[in-house]
Amino acid sequence: MKIFYQILSIATLVAVLVGCCNCRAVQKSRKPLAGGEWQLVQLGGETIQPEEGKYTIQFIEEEQLFAGVGECNRITASYSTNEKGELKLEHAGMTRMMCPNQEAEDRFVEMLNKVTRYDMDGVMLMLFEKDNLLAVFQAKQ
Image 1 (cartoon, rainbow, N blue to C red):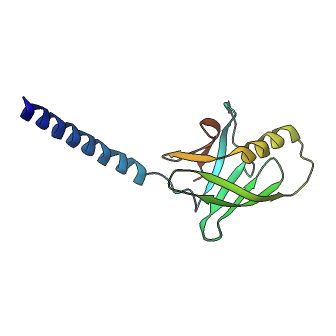
Image 2: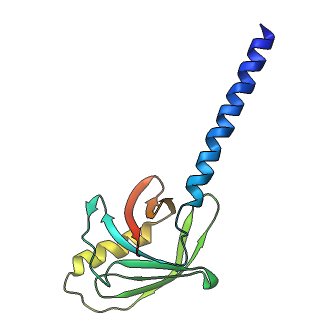
Image 3: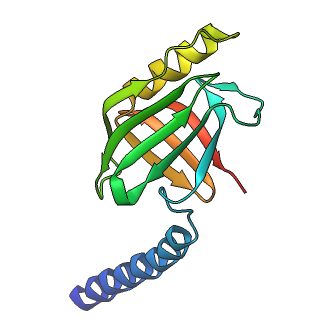
């Protein structure tokens, strides 16, 4: 009976390892955080219709620089990430123009100030405050 449990344990371990191989393939197909532009498609559970030149973000790895555009203002910050998916935006600054849809811009900036981590699924970037999904961005082509 002892041999049966040993074989069962080994079979379980092999199944887990084979399953993880598939996980690594999915991670490799993910778009990198830095090196491209991300378009906001969902904010606070509400679908956002993408508008050219509005509500985009990008991460510039070489300088650890975050850059974004809200309704009409530009936002910059330094950023840091780690292997756990934590994301920290610091030393943020932005232009201060009054926008036609100032309420939407304020919600966007407030969301960015709350971000503590990120996750990705293919070409989708999700920003979280702990376990609370704040926003979803899609990689721009």
